[in-house]
Length: 314
Image (tube, rainbow, N blue to C red):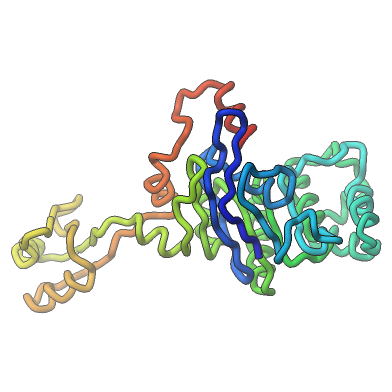
């Protein structure tokens, strides 16, 4: 379990995160999302003890990261997949990590096979593609068989087969009762992979909820109806607070202000035949854009220097 309590971090005059509190529970894939510059990387670095907060505290499995005697057995992390000496082989890199914790060579071989790097295990990582770096970073995170995983953009650079693999892996780890905390900009993948979301913007938590509840809250109360008797249904639905409009064809209506159940009941009471009755729900990407609209620090047209600064403190 990861427990973040009232973390505030400033870089000079810039407040990167401001009084942030949340918990990441075991048994779930928790997605960590937010616009660039929102504070995601800052908080992930605090979880791993790489930055010290101005105030507040972070614990992983009951204690600060630095207080774990064998942290690789508690927390597996990947914040920057390419942070590996390019002259080392994949096996050499993992062995160097394993020796610091008394992890046997057989475990290195296990994680190499698990991430699909067996054929390139002895090649210098400087020749690796981004996707191969990602797989090696995940192997390193799994090396100590930890109870908690903290992964920053693990699907970057992976092909469709690799994305399916990482999705299956994360869900499997959560199903084993592990804590899985994953940041991503890919909303479509988070919609499939994550069970829970923590959404951050401008250093504040915007939402801490299930994916389903987050999408539902951002969705508009609109129902798509297709019927051969649109005019009669429009008359039957007419009421204060209800808006009915024709959408595309003459047999398709958009009904705002009523649930699908209420529209269906009205149609039944008036013996109106329905071909379709569909509540329109936002995608996770739509919901994310709506919920974070006011939390985007850098709109289109920001300079490269601005983006660089945001990256340094995100």
